[in-house]
Image (cartoon, rainbow, N blue to C red):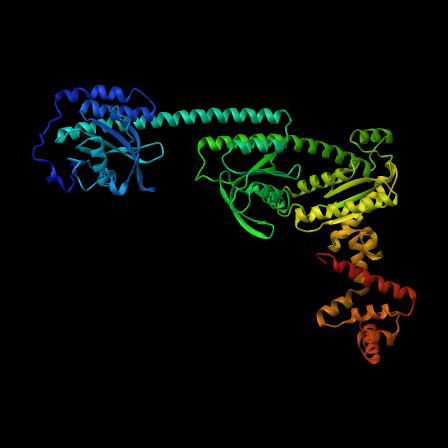
Length: 619
């Protein structure tokens, strides 16, 4: 490696005496240098030993190690050997524009200043050389970095003007190389120690999480603990309790922690719950873009969505908003521990809910189908599940057949949500899933109880609309008493739900909302009804479809107007002669007679039944 000399090399005083510093003993002293440098695993100590070795074994008067920070434009002295006993204020920072350090690093070659006291190329060195009395300076790249990742150089000064030979440079380069090896070794040791400490911390965190969960801690407390352990902001969604917990804000430039938590407790929480329901489709560790709305402002956040699964069901999700480029193995280990702890916590709620739900579903099925043998036994079983069958009550039935259109967990989440809402209003409400419906047994029969039941129906509709993106049919039975009254109330609810499905009706419904003909349809066999319609007006319907006529419309309006020709013609905007001609054609083509009340009732019944069937899907 050829040294670099300043341009004013000729200014070295002619009376200076060349000094040859290198001899064979210096090479034998490398063993002592290596031992000195390697005597410590602390990087600061290694650097101080390195400077001392270069000065002591190469006969330089003083020296130092500088870290070069190109971003700030300065070289900072981080280690120094100065045997001068005078307490002088030494310069610890050098501007790169006036320092040879940047030249040494750029060209990866030593920079030699033969006499710093007369050199004009580096005025900073000239001033300090005069103040401290040193002459020759050599600045060498060390080919290693400090703990902040800054490249380093070593500067050595002699109190005399010396001739720096190739052997001297080779000796110094060897010392630099030994120092670089020792520094890299210390860094690896430091990294291993940091890894070991973090591993121990991770294992301790896992143990603490398990203790917290096994001690029946809440999801909120577990989330708070996980938020302190992970380096990234998190959000935890517990679908078993309709709970969303947030800690730090992932975008402090948009909202602080308090504003973020308030938003999550509001409408933003439901957006996270929606994303959690679909978390089963994401791969572990995959970064996903979340399009959210805070208030009225859209925001896109990148997050890892880790589903929390129990018995094949997604019971929640852990959202991690990465601030680092990637996760280390320990980060993933800690993340797995957090997922496991949260899953265990939610599993407890899931199992408890599943057990209670299964018990109530079996009980309700037995009661609704009147399969009990002893009313006292079934009453005692119900009482153990918190249901008093002796109280008067109503049934609310929610059609849940559309709950699994988009997500296999929507029906389960709807069931859990309805149970939560019902128990918040009255702890005596029993909620179970049965035959594609979710049924609530609400105690009470007076006007006050009826109003509470209607309030509950509205809350159920609001929650179901949010979970399913549509309002299901929700029906309420008449009040009943005793175990014996349950089958009739259940039959009333199932009949209304079937009718709502057929007629594609949604929202809160009662029998009054359907009229007499749809109720007849729900109670009768549909195939027999269709056969009756076909035998009565089937030919007229077919003719209207094939020829574009309006014979059924004419008959319907004629019957609605009490078979009065003028009133019917006025309602349809026809001349009465035109109406009479059309009725005559219907009689001639299809043999329709309306001369008796029985024939008129039969014709009107067929028309009404056909209209009711036509209102339903698939008709």
